Amino acid sequence: MKEKLQSLMVCMRILKDRNFKDGKDKIIFLGTAGGRFSVFYQIRKSGGIWFHLGGKTFVIDPGPGALIHALKNKINISKVDGIFLSHRHLDHCADINSVMESMVISSKHSKYLLAPSAALDEDPVVLQYNRDKFNILYLKEYTDYYIDGLTISTKLTHLHTTPTFGAVFKSNNYSFAYIADTLYTDRLAIDYKADVVIVNTVFKNQMPGFMHLSANDMYAFLEIFKPKLLILTHFGMGFLNENPYALANEISQKTKTKVVAAWDNMVLNLGDV
Image 1 (cartoon, rainbow, N blue to C red):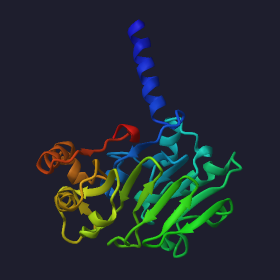
Image 2: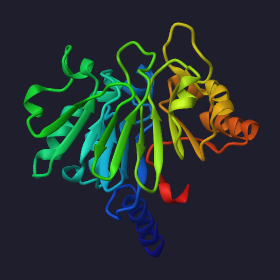
Image 3: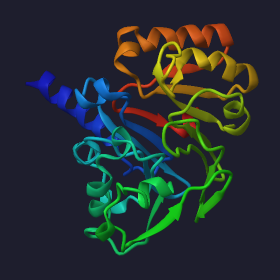
Image 4: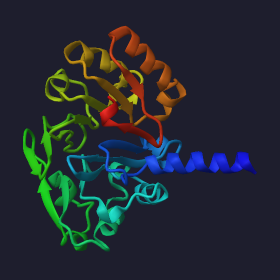
């Protein structure tokens, strides 16, 4: 009985860490799946990247399952301030409408949605009736968006099959970058300079015909810029079969940079980086 109680207490502490009740600046990975098979067979979760920074709480790319995984982790969605949507593909936006409605169902505070025009105007993925209580900010390349203590800075338009954007998220104390789906270009390493860089690496090696980054593209990236921490995520099925943790460790050793492969429900306290 005592062992079961101790186990329950450990689980409760872990659960407490996976939300924002402590007010700490942190990033929570409620999914690390990328590509059709990993996402739509739910080999990994695809609930987006949630963070608290500069007094604001946001979710990046709320894919399939984002709402249910946030609720399971006791995230108070009505206190989430905004959504950053990199592009309109379903593995990034399938739950955007349910998350948006949950954000405003019991809140009177202003909410924000940052998204490309392709997700809002051309065959939109965001329903019209869901937009009334949101400040809609259209993503454009090399633009700064100021939301109280949080600055969101887009960089180049990504080389992908639909208009796609990443960003640098910055407060007075910390910064992290999110590099969404794209082909590799050295411009990524020049633009996305932050304490922590999160990169969507669907493949281990570059696959001809697919406009996605691979883990091995990170060697070129790290020759130009070395963050305090590089995080690989958004793994395709083939990459998962290749053990992303081992490859992240190999890249780390060869480049003398701290590189980790994210896992579902991973929590990064930015003060610990």
